[in-house]
Length: 302
Image (cartoon, rainbow, N blue to C red):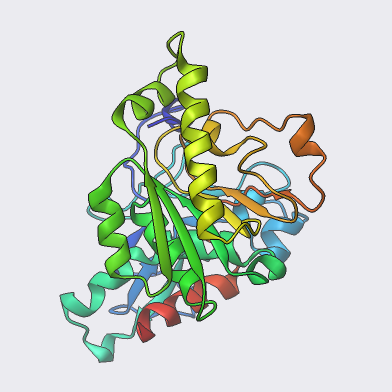
């Protein structure tokens, strides 16, 4: 894991910050859940500082003003995560998905295993109200978080267009089956994929990547009828930021959300800095209380 040194600062612990749990015991102070209820685990919980506006008012624990927002199963003396047999869920780290009397089956519980990831993606996509003002999305990465992002975006408007970039055609085709929007795509070849993830790229890396950027730019411009992209979201698990952090891809009045964990640099040269309205937003975590509850309702409905 790219952040393993951060996690392993002290002692040992069990990983896992999402999933579904059945409550087998509770503290006397807990009044929002009962033994036997089922909860979707979101993992994030607030710091202990009473005056932290991010944690106590906004309930955005990953943006803690003291840098002490916590996640179960994420080290820093955290509680064991959901890969353990039993774990303690602090207040705000869960939402009820079924009451005991509903007696859900395993089949009914399974979709809520995605609560954490869906809330994470939905949080990023709902931070800025104007984000959906146009209907063009460029998505790097057709894996799980990318698929959820495409699903949410496609349902925001009936005539959305989504341009996919990935190195796996099977992932792209699988995503296309589940999305109603008009979709086009570009497949990155294996040589470029390997070069992007090297710590020291080969001598001809600049030429290789320049050619790929040109091809992506031409294809998406044609797909969007030469209109600027509205949203670029990077959900890739590899270092794909060099493919989009350039003047040919980034456009005026567009939103960029670097969501994947593997990108190690975003380059904004003098041309990109001149692009009025270009917004780059970092968004992590499951969002505020409203986003978490609405995520549960979204899974229930669909």
